[in-house]
Image (cartoon, rainbow, N blue to C red):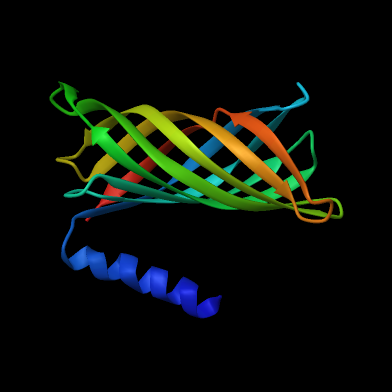
Length: 167
């Protein structure tokens, strides 16, 4: 596991020589509708990474679900299909990607996987050095309960706002 994490980290940082990269942080709010019509809400924070030449966006996140008393960690990756400008330094974006996460709920271990569709807006300041963004995603998730061997369906609508600094 440590070798895999180190390899991924090394690959990401080696890309810095080929792409402009933005790194930052975001706050997350994630309402969830479970297959049994139960609902819950998670909130948390993420570290983000975005490349410029190839419109890839990565988030490494931690969330706490207040209703289910669950702590989650996860990674998301999105490809932005478009990022047209609305005004000189204001744009919007549309993309698709995937999310994978793991959580601990009391004595259960949970694993989530999900495709996602992303829509958002971004504002760049100080000649592109600083980027502010807001995004929302539709994320139909499959949640695997490791202990009980159950599979549940969730509809998640994660919303995030954050800041990125470009090198």
